[in-house]
Length: 449
Image 1 (spheres, rainbow, N blue to C red):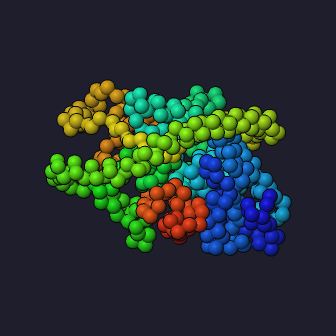
Image 2: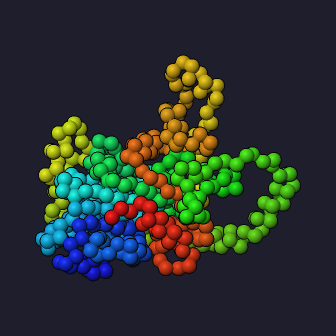
């Protein structure tokens, strides 16, 4: 294992805490350089070991959450065994996932749990930055939803199908994200053991992983920032919202006169003509190039997955994923950014106030043409904002994941349009400096050594 990927083993150091960093789609260890650097500046080598996972670098992230999770688990186990052999056994574990890496990390900790590692290692911190816990399916209703979600899901091989929740994972007959969020799964059991569970979600300008999925919520109050009041944490303003009271709707204002609105819209359109002209010219070429490259990468990914499946040592990871009864734990312990962001959101129909009054009086839910509609509205706890038209599986994921007990921190990156990269300072550039505030908050407020 190379020096650049983890801290060297020093017999005099004896650090008993390991922190694992997992990068995202198309990523590599360099994307996590700032996280690793600031983590090391905060905690010395005699206090903390750092492992930046490298086995899923580049297009290897096409290969799916399961394959990626098994690779990362192998990296973690190899280092744990190496440190133990060198007389520096690990007693505490923290895991940090960025983007898709958050889902891969959730899979990996389930495998570690199933193999009994958490019987001798205490899980401390689990954090995700801009991770699509509910997938990346655009919350649209009707044929346009099916068209976009079907196209997008077929451009990233196994990972694409899983992120759009159209896959069938092993013998569960369910998408892998649904299994990852099942309260009877090894993955939720593992996650619940971590002392601290936190997530950071961009409220705007995340073209890779929208707010609703990274924040695990069924509403999006930030579609129109002019319509809401945002409150920030004093020491981290204006980038980290107050988790206790982050947002509220503004009082309705009188609409502008029709001709004023028409004039403003016309001016906006004129200023955007050069952009529209460029897009008309470039989109067909870019689409063809993207599709061809996706086909090539998907072919290579399928080959890699086949080779991975034939690899040695995987039997120990192919264990029961769902656990029933108290004895189940013992039984397994030994063994496109831009196009996506351009889509608007659709919402479930507004609730009728009279129906709600009738429900309260009669103690029964009113009939509705949408299944479990009232139950779905309760998942957000934000009555002031409409409920997104998510799938039944996504509503179930929200309920199950919220029950684990996350601390959710909402991030407002204001000086750069690529908030997905800025949130962790994926590269050193002035426009990403706001991400340093986010990382400082994580280290000072959430990460326990």
